[in-house]
Length: 520
Image 1: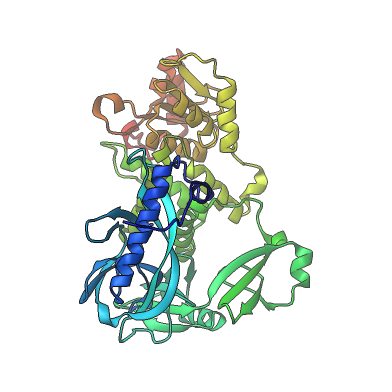
Image 2: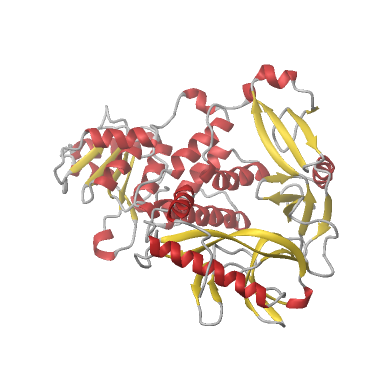
């Protein structure tokens, strides 16, 4: 077969380097690419109908816009379309070029696709060194373009090409009665009036969703920006005393691009910037707190207790749990969100402190960060561990952090030195609860002590973390008694008895509960 010289060794190598491919390009790879391109052109010269490898601009009945849909295969009657394809892999068949990709499959009749010109498209093939993760060779060629819009659109002119779609859930508010809140993943509204105001500001239109209680808002896209005070004051834009919980803001509208930009005054903003990965969990905690009239910090602490209690086999019910059954569902959603977040972040084999970042974010919102409680940045924790690394394998040691915070330094040490017993201490109960949860999810074995490390006699609480992990493979938590604490540290048990006797004298009419019934 004769084929054109579409690429040479230099041009194909430069293209793949530019795209970040690490494979080594050889002359046989160049020859194969040119052969594939020639066959792809021959495939299109034979027929004028939609052909495998062509591009389709596809708009669904629900308004989803797919500008790079891919024809996987087809004939003169029907085509198989991938709506969200990865870069297709090409291979040589006896009759024509074959393609392999994945992402959103659908079928359509060939005659319904409307011609839409010629467009450049990227493809992949396996290189000469075989099938390896980073050994795909990229190349470009021109293919036919087509377009198709499904009939009977649900939302008229609105599509994701030029508009933004917001899914808004209408849920009964707990207080007051007969009231509702309107929730989106990015915001919460507390009345129908607030919802209508948002629709007006975003120049949108509200539709009923596909089930009761769901609304579809098609509107302009929101972009948030922070400006220094002097620049914010000079900005020519509409001023709003409050918008989605931020006060005040200035709003500019770009009708051409369908964008609403909301400018926040940087002087009114807190110094801590919540990491992007934490924001969904932060939103769940804060939305629940604000919608039910609770302090977010209080909800955060109760969430930590909820996590610890869930991993404490045989523990009695929490004696002072103030939330109703309907509200407990939100704590389960928070727990699910945290577990999914940690599962995603720990895939690389490192460590991740979601609760520490979440605590600083919530504290900043409530103005408590002025007290100066900021945890050591992760990079600094890793550096400190590296500075203490002697190159020897450290196992079976007792590693202690007397001011653990959220346990970051111990986590950084744990991922580099497995098989050690970790001891975390802090005078803050919240910090201790965070450390318990962090040690639990990272597979650390050790204990967390709530006391002032400068006054070890004054034991306030303690937890044993993952003590059965090596036998059962199941993470778990168990409360530590003061007697266990003192015996493990060779402290006087007589002092413990004196403290208990003193408590009885101070509260003569109060029945002393067994330790196992105490609250987390």
